Image (cartoon, rainbow, N blue to C red; front, side, top):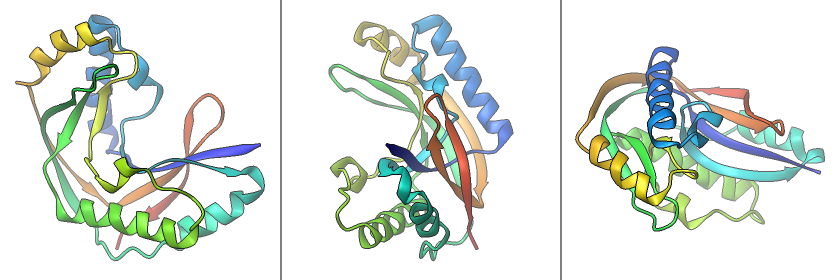
Length: 183
């Protein structure tokens, strides 16, 4: 058996509630509910699997990450989209931020050094931070209609990134199992 993990920044509760309201609106009006299955987040390390027997090794790696990034403010401004032919995505777009980019690169480097036999997806190396509000079950035709609306909307929010999290899937949902506090 294997455990499934990923690393992410979770916005504060008040901003997460606002994002969830957007996801619920999209679910009601555009029939895309998949994004409601996981808490609002910015993925720093895409999902990865390890044998159940390696759980303590994963925890030890996470708790001993070599991160030099200090806590920072992250600004959300507007919406973006990945215009994938079969599975389009609508997301909230953070304003480009050097601390965020550096944090993600340090995590990937540390992962590669700790687990050299584990692959890192090309998409992770070309990091496009985002908070997904519609994907997977968003049909292409419905995407066009939703995107016309969301491409002109704004979401002006800023929050302090003081930590990021290791999440583990329990077979039904993702759960935070550890947090890494930034200096």
